[in-house]
Length: 411
Image 1 (cartoon, rainbow, N blue to C red):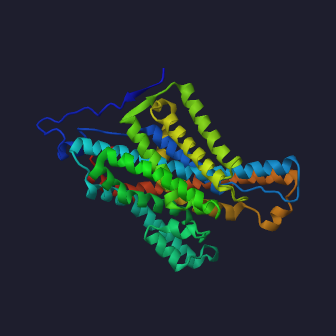
Image 2 (image 1 turned 135 degrees about the horizontal axis):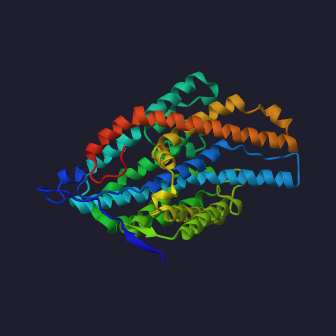
């Protein structure tokens, strides 16, 4: 039968140390929380976004019948990958809330200064280095030009608000808008957990849910982008992640493999329904307010089902390579547009050439070429991310350990 099991604590060896002392905690003697299966889920979230940005939209205007319908379905399936960002948000909120609650339980409080230092050391080095790279590219590449206000908004970690007003860019730093949303969440969440504990977390999460619904409903007439880039519209995923941490209370689902597969497939179906039926993130249409709201709730249900299907799964199910890719998923997300742009510029045919290939045989050729571009770009993304993790991120992660109270993954 399916059930919940308590996450076993790390063996304690705190001889001559006061239980719960800062010294004991920093030596890893009190508690530890690391779920390698969630690293695999991180890679799945990244891969969804990667396919969303990297797969071409085969929208045919010169043909009708099965070929045109197939092209439309491919485009809608591609757009579904945008929900990977929502999964990142929900997963991040679950993990942050769980770690904060464990820290408060073990130490009696939440160390706000240490929390922000951990987040800065984890997020800022790669973020600002890549932002600088994007600015330099904008100087030399016409297609990557950035307005001064665009740069300033990303420097101040408010890039999503500027992009929400329609200020999109082809620059590979564009996906960094989601980092702004996460940083805005981090700005207040440790204070909520420190001052009010579980009660305040629960209350604020339950307030954020209807607030998010209102913003989604009101912004739906503008279009999918206005909802996607709005912090308040996305905060429902942070609220759901926090509520999931409260509901599980440190436990993990003990499910049979078949049940996990069914939950995962149901999550996929929820995502596809959100786009195929309600057109939440399909660029070809502006859904009604009711459709947008219903679709986003299907996205949220899918994200929850993904986490529950993975959480507590045996590490034997997942190759170590997938766990490693989840470990470097931050770099994967940061570098993927740069890699896609470079490989696409080298291999993808010009618009005039593509127009001449609007036949069944031409579509087969373009599909095979698109698959090759995805493979090469993914390889390049992994290479850049591994290099970044080893030489840029790890030194700062080592410093981050000094301010860590609840151990998670090793660096």
